[in-house]
Image 1 (tube, helix red, strand yellow):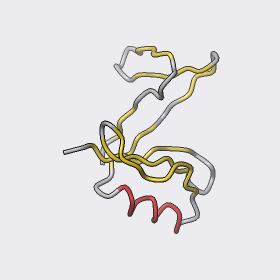
Image 2 (cartoon, rainbow, N blue to C red):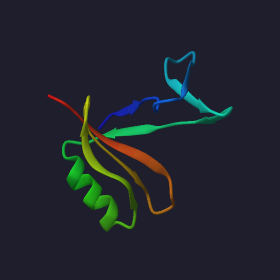
Image 3 (tube, rainbow, N blue to C red):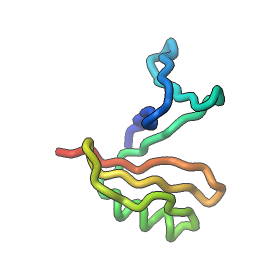
Image 4 (cartoon, one colour):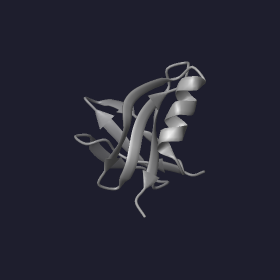
Amino acid sequence: MRIILRLCPGMAQRNSADGVRRAQRAGAPSWSVFWQSDDVDASVAKVSALGGAVLTQAADHGLGRVARVADPSGARFWLFRPKG
């Protein structure tokens, strides 16, 4: 598993010294974490079965298949499978 950090559309980009991109909206720093999955739909089902929430159903987008979920404590993250 690898971590991919990306900016959400409409957010200003800032580059930090370590090369990780940090997103800012209305002056408040935030992160969008993308966990790569071999099967986004199965991962969404597992998150739900373990007490997490599905915030955005799995769907195909330009770069691959994605879904937004939250763990049982409410921490939000994306599940992602790149095309190809």
